[in-house]
Length: 84
Image 1 (cartoon, rainbow, N blue to C red):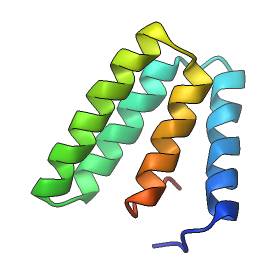
Image 2 (image 1 turned 60 degrees about the horizontal axis):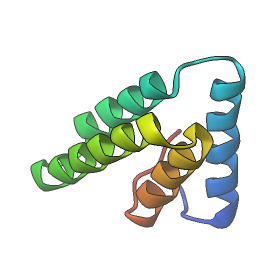
Image 3 (image 1 turned 180 degrees about the horizontal axis):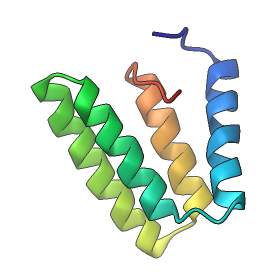
Image 4 (image 1 turned 90 degrees about the vertical axis):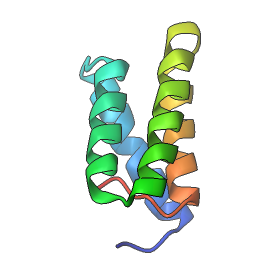
């Protein structure tokens, strides 16, 4: 697992922005992130990730795609989850 730092958060956010700029639907990005995280976690954390994914997927329907994906990334980094 990589170090949790502002630099890591920034690098991950840049990767998410790049996906959005290349016209990948944010819903697809969110589902893929959640699926990959769920596969790597224990049961308790799987439930939490599923809850967060459902919340953020709903937020995508009513809000800013970039803001929602950034919040998702930040929330997962706060809990020790990392996107590579």
